[in-house]
Length: 605
Image (cartoon, rainbow, N blue to C red; front, side, top):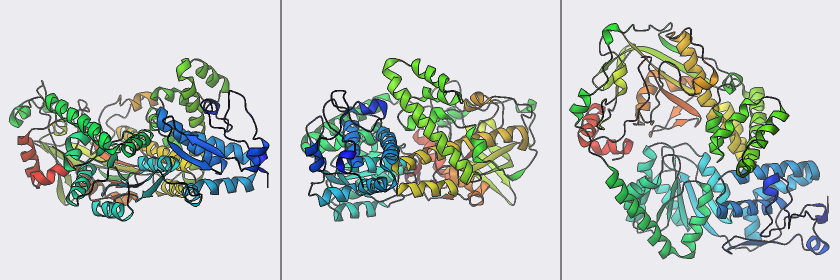
């Protein structure tokens, strides 16, 4: 076993952040790397970490990695670095130490890291606070919540992570029982917004005053102000990502009354701006008169080569070619434009030239992108090797017709009716997806489902217990592989399974920009905003056939799954439904067979 002097020491000073630029695990003091002196070795490398605001974060002996994590997240929180920057840097430090220290010491280092909270408590250091975090009932997406959990722990908070699909009552009961200082709520799908409102209402009924922090892809500052905050008499703060949470929580802790006053004043301003931005909508009947009207008499309906269900084999190796790297990098708070790196194959000189060509203020981030892509490619190689056949895909092509604002699928034995919405903004056309399907005669519409599969999910699950960075890396790649597999599936449908574009020859870039005939709208997205449409799609496709389950709120499991419709009309295009008026809400609820109040869960007013 090495003595303390054999380890690099992390010296935390105002200038002690140079390592961030190079990835070197040592922290530089006045630009000069140094080893620990004798007194530091004898004291077990005593280190103080203080934030820019002077908030005490902890003192005493920690494993080198724990000190590194505290430093990274301290800088992350105050300088508002990207939410996953720390995870990449910690991984580089792990790899470096594993090489320098050897397996035995590396293993001890990892144990010290994963027991960071316990180490704090045993050393007598006071927690910065306690937060209960959960993905709300009916939602299975947790990548953002997992990032929050790790960032909070590294900032000295005690975190109780309740997982996914957690009912409101359980969240509140846990927070009360554990004497939590904060509650964090996350969600991806639209119904999760109503679940967050439900948590806030129940907390109000119980007379609680615990601050609520909301986030996730479905949340926004405006929705928080307009919908969730009015349900609760105390703080409901929107957090756009994990990086800003520590500073918000520190603000609340230092002066709760002033923090509540500021947050509520800001939300009142947002509510006023939202109300002023609402424009008059057309009556539903007028919107229907402005529907898109194709020349159906001249339309030559393409008949699918394979009517009914087709299971399509897509390997991870095949899907990699269709990965949209422009969507991958922003997950890590890096510019989407760095995706051009993926087009540079096997040439270190070319990559170096690319880096040199970046603007000076972007070069550090560009270097991060290069390293992240390298690690992503290593992870993808492992997926090809170990779970190449994990992806499952199915498409079902059925006779179909439109009936007003509905699409009716003529499935074997019975029809499946999919109610749709129509734009009501004042414009030349008011579109609905039903406009692109023949009202009578022969036409076809497809439904599909794709999942990255349980094989990849098991790898992610394994890393969640041991390696936060790799868990996040594989999860973000899994999401991209599911989308890539859909792109590949759609290409095969156009050319072969449906065959309406047999001579199509487009490269990957044009495919990712959807420069082809036909569309594939997904439930919960702008032209099909009602998440409950997924239940009609599930009835057509039979999600269980590809290993997908659906929650009562319309979330798919595994989380890296995609489903939707396929429409072939050459004039079909993507659009946004936008706001709808009360007359359409009534009409749509009636077509759905539910009350307007029940509809609010799926389409918040």
